[in-house]
Length: 166
Image (cartoon, rainbow, N blue to C red; front, side, top):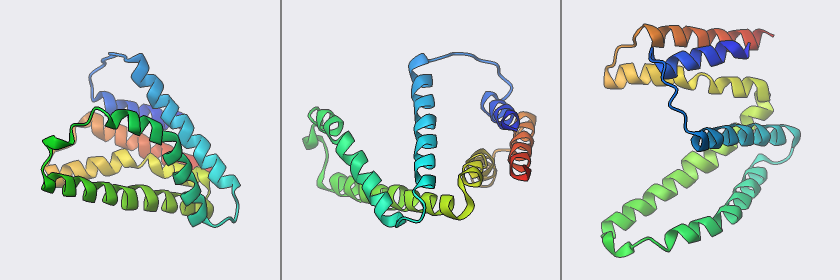
């Protein structure tokens, strides 16, 4: 059933243009992120009935500790005098928003969804993101989907439906 997903997403991405301008490092990073997300999902599923808030906190703390040396390396080239006081307040507010809503609550809800629906169903919901993007693109920006978008959307929906039926 995964073939339906790949075909649908492939048609959505290519949009009628077959362009294989490959970037091996970018492709490697993409696959690495997919495999790490699968690994994370499987670990959360095996955690069983542990407190999800504590599990999310511990994973976030471990990620922060791991990434802190890289962040410190990057920040040494940052010239903070280029930014005004208002810019720094806006950046701080944006970081707090991203940390609380996009990271902490996002991971907490993901972990809860895995415990409620299982990893297979929860992961299948990720395939609906391109369809939600198509709808948002049509409603917010006003773009009309072309035939490739429609075919890709139907294939993605078929893949989600078939995998949930099995």
